[in-house]
Length: 350
Image 1 (cartoon, helix red, strand yellow):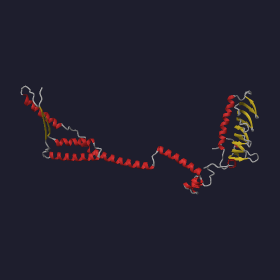
Image 2 (cartoon, rainbow, N blue to C red):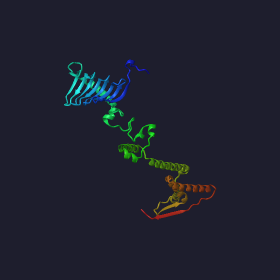
Image 3 (cartoon, rainbow, N blue to C red):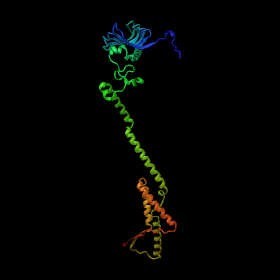
């Protein structure tokens, strides 16, 4: 898509950082194709003054922030041909503030009617924003300013790597250099070793907070699979015993019928129109179907303990024996079980 800017105003810019040998100042920012500082950058003068903001053809022009090194004062506002011109605000080291209009570095104030408080502080905010964007072009790794003024190169820079750390370069270039061992890295590059160790600790802390360790995860998976298999086996066993376990019955049904019948017979024989007399009380407990009652009791216990494999197996054996007895009963065989009787007589009167 073609640019909407007219062609005569097209310019090519390069990010550069230069040291001026004549006065000792240095510049970091955009440089036009003709070699002039232009557009946006930071200029540090040899006497300690610093300007951060717009440039045009090698001169401070536009919005910018200027700090004086001798009195620690600072100005935020508009510039024109290296001179304060326009609205702005100036702060002094003693705490006083001037805002209003400047013309060719001369303070005119707010009485000209051009720059009131709103216009002056608005220009100051614009200058602060421009200065912050200009600072992004400082500390170019392989520049004259970095090598001559700062005297160091930043670690893990995408352009410059310290000797012995070339293996950290991204892509195929880093694969051309062998990675050192932990002992060699700690001995030759202790600062880098400490940084890597610290980063690894932070990573492990975050990982352990949200995840399980690998060994714990494997053990957890094995245990979970074993529990799932046991639960599936138990469900299958429960399903196979479901018809037998869900059978509804009355443990004392036959006994109640026998007791009720005998009681009715005794009442009929003892009544006969005679007056009731008080005699010894008799309590008789007859377990004529003891085998069947015991079997049903075990069936009830098996339903309550189906989750235990040994109890389930026991209940299954009992169910098989019961089925065998039912088969013999259907074939006409008499199912005679043990007979037990308990009698208790207690004399009492009115």
